[in-house]
Length: 219
Image (cartoon, rainbow, N blue to C red; front, side, top):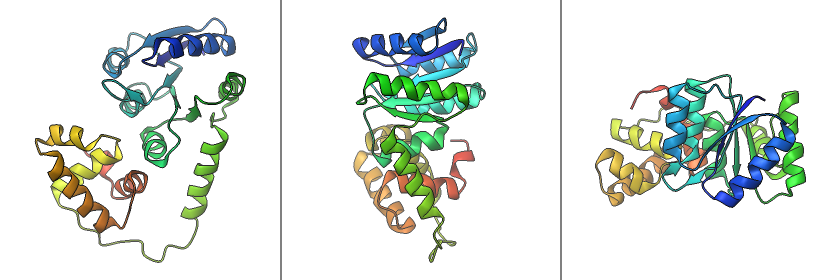
């Protein structure tokens, strides 16, 4: 790994993560960023071709999921690994849908994180144990016979726009700003979408959005 992007807003965490990265990948050039905006600009400029990006999800100016998606689109050979405190489905599956290669929890011992990062060189996705279990459970559920595949779900154009943004991890207020609608109106749309799709979480909504082909649409 020659060029590595490190996206983390807290200086003290960014410092120990950089030290850990250089321990695992000696001699690597590490580009540090504390904001989603700066990371997106750096990726879009193409001034640095990254081999690996370690990305936090909860940043002051947005979601690291956007950075994962941008890196996949602009530099598809680069590997994105989420490094976060969030272990819930609502964060995990949108990140994986966006193209994350791995998902590591910060709460682990640094030695364990180092071991997980070392697996990248062998082509193995670095996954914290609890995250690996969630992924395995998901695929096990997908393998079960589907009694109601919802083949005739009909969403309006506006519902599709809201669903796509929910699947990408945007909050209700953020979606409201993007679509010039109130937070309460967006909340009503989300309730309607969940009812139509028979889902109850962002993760399930993200999977349905992919099934309906929304991620390939331009918004």
